[in-house]
Amino acid sequence: MNLLFSKAEFVKSITDVSQKPQEKLPEAAFAGRSNVGKSSLLNALFNRKKLVKTSSTPGKTQLLNYFLVNERYYFVDLPGYGYAKTPKAVSAKWGKMIEKYILQSQELKFVCLLIDSRHKLMQADEQMSDWLNFNSIPYIVILTKVDKLTKNQLAKQRRIFETTFPDHHVLPFSVNSIEYKQALAELIYNMIK
Ligand SMILES: Nc1nc2c(ncn2[C@@H]2O[C@H](COP(=O)(O)OP(=O)(O)OP(=O)(O)O)[C@@H](O)[C@H]2O)c(=O)[nH]1
Ligand SMILES: [Mg+2]
Image (cartoon, rainbow, N blue to C red; front, top):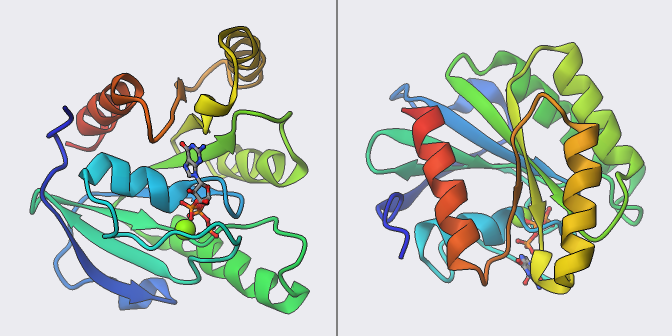
């Protein structure tokens, strides 16, 4: 059982990087398309069912949500992007909010970029990873919901994404897999400390 991040508490929600918590600690941020499983992944890492709000309807997370972990660092749950039904003005606002946070948060160590393991790289994922590359932001790639794939499908998708991101860690993930949860927790633990 993963106990690396078992001490976690919600700190605050912000809309602008200027509202960050007073205490400065290293941060990891969780980004990805709406509904990809960011908030669920955080609950899984925390071994909590409902600390982070999740939903089967895209667009659940609308603010930058800070969680204090082990009293030593923050995990930041970001709103999703790329959901077609979100009004353009709203998604533009969220996009700006995310970009500004990533560029201006001095304490941000790296981004966890979540991508749905079932599909090809979507345009929104590509835009985000290009933007991270362009701005030299360190990131790891997490392929979510792998419980929906067969072993063969997963092996194939992993090869595709490892080819797409040759210079980045690419990890499979499912909220149901203790093994994948542990491997991801260990990587994040080593990267953030
Ligand atoms: N099968 C499966 N479903 C998952 C997994 N992780 C998340 N989901 C489901 O995917 C849906 C979206 O999960 P969220 O964690 O709310 O996704 P999010 O990326 O935070 O979404 P937004 O906040 O809207 O951007 C929910 O119905 C979850 O139950 C997983 O590992 N496996
Ligand atoms: Mg969310």
